[in-house]
Amino acid sequence: MNHRPLFRPLASLALATLCLGSAWAQTLPYELREASNRYPVQLITGKDCRACEPARQLLVQRGVPFTEKKVDTAGDIAALRHLTGATSLPVLIVGRQQVVGLVSQEWNSYLDAAGYPKDNRLPKNWARPAPEPLGPAVPPAPAVPSPAPTSPAPEPTDDPSRPKIRF
Figure 1: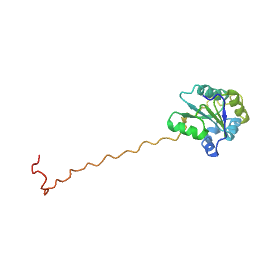
Figure 2: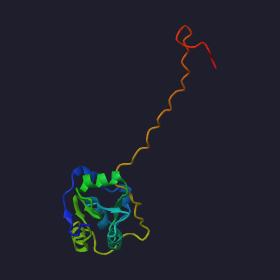
Figure 3: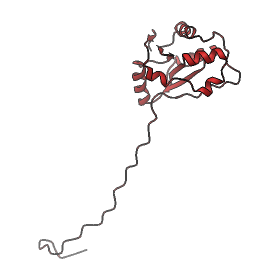
Figure 4: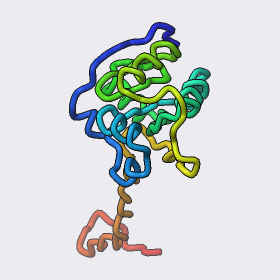
């Protein structure tokens, strides 16, 4: 695990995938809605990542609305490398900025700069969206058509080299 956070701006195309849906953001108090519209937060985690649960809890306890992407497959790992240039988890993305590795002070600094309140102001009935895979969905493999049954080749009848016995 990388203990020192890696800071790297994200491309605007990647940012478009992070933006919150309007219905999701509309349920938030004004201050959170403004911060999440300007600087959406995304957490990238993995199943064998020791720091990922404490990272998630930092965001939950602070009351930061975020989307979570999980890295489980080879496609997810490739997407992580493409998006962040790193292979370490967790990754915090705030707007166009990203931090690789959990360092609470760094994460809180980015969240403060983005305007997220230091205390939890999420509505009590607010539910965080379920984590989704980071990489693109892998379509099912196309069905390979079975070969058409072939009829036996007609036996030549006028071949003199062929024996005349049939079974």
